[in-house]
Length: 379
Image (cartoon, rainbow, N blue to C red; front, side, top):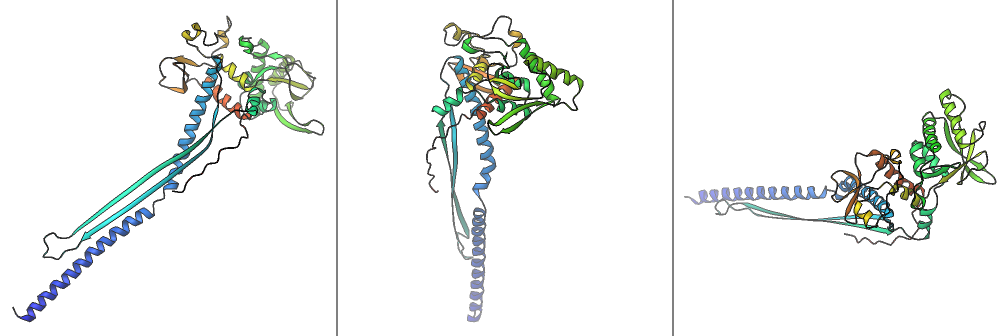
């Protein structure tokens, strides 16, 4: 082989090595850029919003139902109801990633050939910080035993809640006409006139023949007023409105009545509402619990509050009990080695429990306590 040929062959081999080296570096650079781009374009925060919002709201709603049901059960056992509120939820996430890449580009005479190595490491951390605040203090106790403002009850009717359902839960009497009561651990069944009154109010409400408004008075301030419509009302509804007036013993010619809190009838232009407190509402709810027989025998729970012949008036609310956890329940709690639950298909009791939870909002049972200061370290 001549020197010229040898130089030529050597030159050709060198060029091929350079090309091979350049090609390997290009592949390596492409892989690095691709991985870094994938990591750089990934945002952890926005992806957690949809999941966290619904998961936390569902968990808070379920725990609120269970807490309310548990405290209702406790009242039947003369136990102390305890409420704990979720004050704040701070969910912190951190994601640490790392990439290692390496490789060797060999000549065509090398034994090992070309190779590329890579590694990826990721650390995901979820640190939720949930703050609980016990609902205690004078304001909470005062709100628990203070009757609900009558105007809030009737504004619920104005917003579409059924009159017979809401009034049966929240009032002891209307203008002296008495509802079913469990005061003193003894059941007093509702006056027949009260049951009929609820039916009439529901029919008149469905027809849109009565409404609510707030009027301003320079002396008394704002006052809630219930009024009955005269125009564009069917004759049947007019007759039912007249029956309502007769039961409540109010003048037939008045169309507007001021709502006042009172257990007895007031002036002719007033509708006396003896509203219940949250404690009374929960106690009335507790009277429908099916207490286990063993708990009645050891006197740990209040005996059945039903009067003879009163079973025909039950059936709208039912809290079941048993030793085994129910398979399908709207809300279920364990207390004294037994399960107490509301069946998921019992929409009457589900509606009643939801209303009780809503009444807590109307009663303003939350306090103005200073929440603890939370410091979330940066990740």
